[in-house]
Length: 155
Image (cartoon, rainbow, N blue to C red):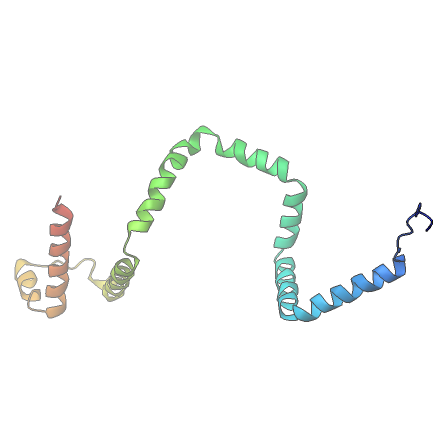
């Protein structure tokens, strides 16, 4: 009869062999992800140049104290109305037609550029006002203002 096995001798990988295996895995991963690693290095460099990396590191080291200070500051009475109105403000921003606002601000900027600083003391008579209505740009602007006021007055 065969002799029973009483001890099992496991194959042990030496520390040097394990390091060599780990190094080859890391080398392969670096080779496969070369572009991402280079972008990551550029990102870290940019964060370091701007001082953001130091701030993030310091925040991470003292995050409990920093978060405690932040919560204590936000919990003050003067920020209560801001925190209560913040969700409504976010929803309002979602409802705004940004393209229309951009067009309006562009027109306002053009109007401000066209204003004559020398005409501050000049008075406009009723005749001048009636005469200016014949100018197509002024007429278009007044029509837009009237439509705006009509739309604003609707319920």
